[in-house]
Amino acid sequence: MTQVWLHQPQTVVPAHCYQQQQVGAQMLEWTTDPRDKRLVRMLYRHSGIDTRHSVIPDWGDGFFAFTENATATQPTTRQRNDIYAREASVLAAELGHKILNHNDSFSAKDITHVVTASCTGFFNPGIDYILCRELGLADNTQRFHLGFMGCYAAFPALNMAAQFCRADPDAVVLVMCLELCSLHLQLNGSEDSLLANALFADGAAAAVVAARPPATGHSCRIMDFHSALIPSGVDAMAWSIGDNGFDISLSSYVPKIIGAGIADLTTSLLDRHHLGIQDVHTWAVHPGGKSIIDKVAEGLQLPAAKVAVSRDILRRYGNMSSATILFVLHDILAAAQADHQQLLGAMAFGPGLTAEMALLQVEPGN
Picture 1: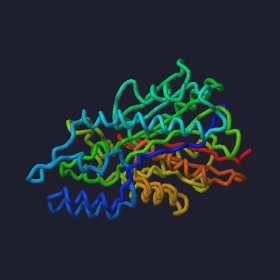
Picture 2 (picture 1 turned 90 degrees about the vertical axis):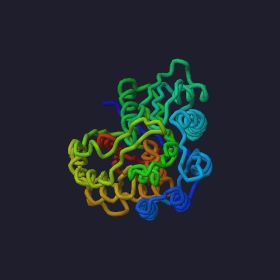
Picture 3 (picture 1 turned 180 degrees about the vertical axis):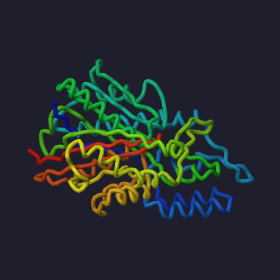
Picture 4 (picture 1 turned 120 degrees about the vertical axis):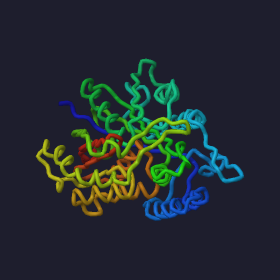
């Protein structure tokens, strides 16, 4: 079977950066119910997040309007999506140029496919088209967009790219995940919204996938992917389109559901390669929240060092949905020792409850 490599991901975030403590204080001002105030204090105190980025100036001050009795007037879905179309276009172009400028193996003329993923907005022609125009890609570049999958979408995108490369070893695929989650902040008093408001942020990440390793530096070979459903969590995480943005269902039981099944799911992937959990050097766990990392580490009996990068990404950026796992992979690969082989396990979770995993081999540089 044709070998396929993931080239070093690159990342971008919006210019507006907010301290989690600052955001929590603002959310408290907008919360009137005493019980909700206690929940907000708890969520922000134990989030594991220090900073988050957003395309919204002042983290909602002006995004929301308030009447004299402190009732919030919230942007409509159309108003939010108009911001998405404008800001996503800017971030996609910035990131597209960045990944080509930092890649010494491929130029724009080498790209044959573009695969994009986003669940936080829609417009057409979309970011896949913008990448072709902004980067000067060939008019016959094949474009594919994965929409509304949620936090796990990077894995289907990378899997699709790997299959293109196995079918055609000359294929070079640009994969981009871009999410503007903060556009769906809602002040409706629901526990799901309070939890989502405390976690989600904006960011984008991209990588090149090809059937040859990087020209310089260490390489990351894609070994395998694994998909699974956890039916007991079908109602625990979901998105729908409402009149005031996208409505999220996000149960506090999600980490427990994931933790209870993660060992069996991981073993299903590793058994195909006659490997055990102890053979994997580092784990890239989607930092959907502090408790998700905790429960995965507990379920797989992992020492703290093996999920340290996931915790650090959560601390610095929050949950950026599908882009987040590529932020984790960026930092793991950037720090990898060029003279050592190491197995890397990666996973993310989303509506369904869906689990997506990948097994990667980091190999010594040239």
